[in-house]
Image 1: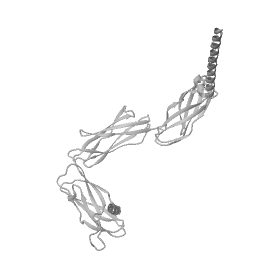
Image 2 (image 1 turned 135 degrees about the horizontal axis):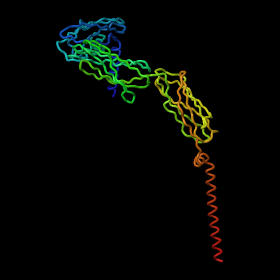
Image 3 (image 1 turned 90 degrees about the horizontal axis):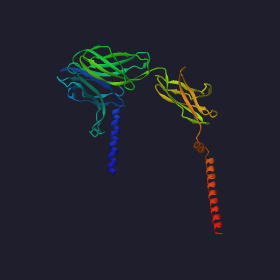
Image 4 (image 1 turned 120 degrees about the vertical axis):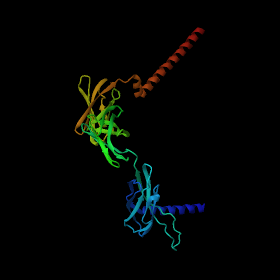
Length: 395
């Protein structure tokens, strides 16, 4: 048990040293992306820095399917603390590679330290850092890769911009690239189709296709795009977007029926259709009877409504003095100097006899006791009458 504990402590100590060594080396850049050049050589450079207080010996290495083709002028050197040191390496490309993206790594690691006596009693492996090296091998013919699909923040009656960025990973020029964009509403119902501009795209070139669309209806939408280039097709993943307006929509108002003498409660559910926060939003209520005369009013709490968010407001109306009947309420929402309105019906009912009994349990209990006493007295009266009759018959 003690031996296992010692082994774990030694392992933890070694890992701690490895982590410190790894974090003590910094590199720039952290990745390269290069194009495959058959039977050619290309030179690249990066820099490294160590944060230790003493000079550190480091070794350079490569990983991946091109590891044997990556050559360093020196495989081992010394870094001066807090100073950036430049390193060069050469890629000797083979004659052939499979089309697509090949991931390799260029690494720099601290060299194992020797013991105090100069022997090799130090740690055998010291962690380091690695630079990602992506090698792109072009495809035969024309081949477009989607890099990005962006949709600008939209406002009603102003153009919404659609940007589809692609890169030509083929060996041939694309003569005609265009995008067909289908727009649907939040329920998936088709609204319309637009077409982007057309571009020629050279091999290795990145280009952006643009399209615009304008609507007067705020809300949430879905854009589905199809990229068409020289009789080829590339489906772009759909993307949701919003078109906003400085509008707060009252999408639901409800007032549960109440009994005479109660306080009415009106629920107001609101939804922002704007891209920014709207402060100090509140609602008030005007209540009128069947003749159109105003009989009451109320006001809700005030809220700050975040962009594209929802909230619920409560308005109370003291209707205790009002007779039974239906009343018409008008909810007016106030926000950013604008208003929205929605009607609501408030119904006041007579409480049923059972409801009254529930409200006054003592009365119900007393009535029950009286009824039981009446039944009890009736039974006693009947019993006495029967006894008297029996006595009379015996005489």
